[in-house]
Image (cartoon, rainbow, N blue to C red; front, side, top):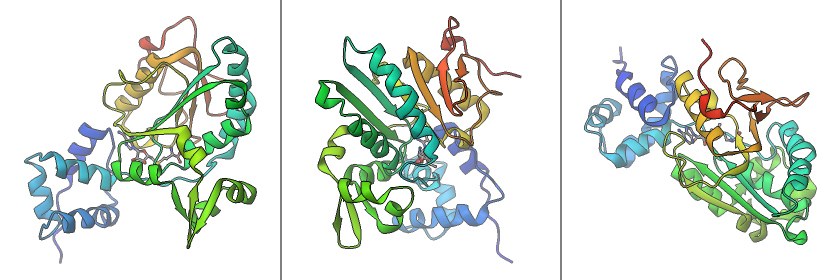
Length: 281
Ligand SMILES: C[S@@+](CC[C@H](N)C(=O)[O-])C[C@H]1O[C@@H](n2cnc3c(N)ncnc32)[C@H](O)[C@@H]1O
């Protein structure tokens, strides 16, 4: 009988360093994700890697965290959210910011870039740049390999088939062998950066829109609340927060209100500042 490694310290590292709760029953998934790290760092097996993890060498810790993240994404994933962004959020902000003509958008857990590039396509459709608008679109993820992929902007046939209408594929990508490369125009619209949502948000601008989708669900309650609170701190008073359908927030937070008949779209509740957000027991 094979000996099952003790994943409790791994769980501890993931929670402490990335807010991620390890589903302990998924041992097969854990092993599949850790094996490339075992090979890359030259360990004999997973228990040897787990033992070394106790010494806290940063390169190993980062590699393990990255390996344990779930990076599944798709262009225009949960289409309704993008419709809300295009039909509700953008028109309101166009009016509210007509004097400065500046928009600042943060996509918080962008995986391989499908989400920020989908946002960029909608901004491009709106022809804001032609009307003299200055748009900052920052996209971040804890996983540096994902950020490198996003910056490269090259996707497989399978990836572009998931959610991307054919007319967008033809007009915004060029084929490179079996893959598709995003246009330079869209790539230049996004600034990518490796960033852990547990770290300080001080470098970020005050944002008009924050996308925080399909990431909170991996966090424990405390981390969720802390991330949402700190997003509230950098969100403009009339800014919008878009979350994924799987992370219904109402039972977790104060400080935001759900927009009428727009699932996943939240505004900061006023006058209560988001700073006072706390866990609902
Ligand atoms: C399932 S993907 C979601 C991608 C995209 N937002 C979407 O909805 O399609 C979750 C992403 O969250 C990232 N992530 C997990 N923990 C994080 C953390 N503490 N800080 C920043 N990103 C994190 C993962 O690396 C992964 O790329």
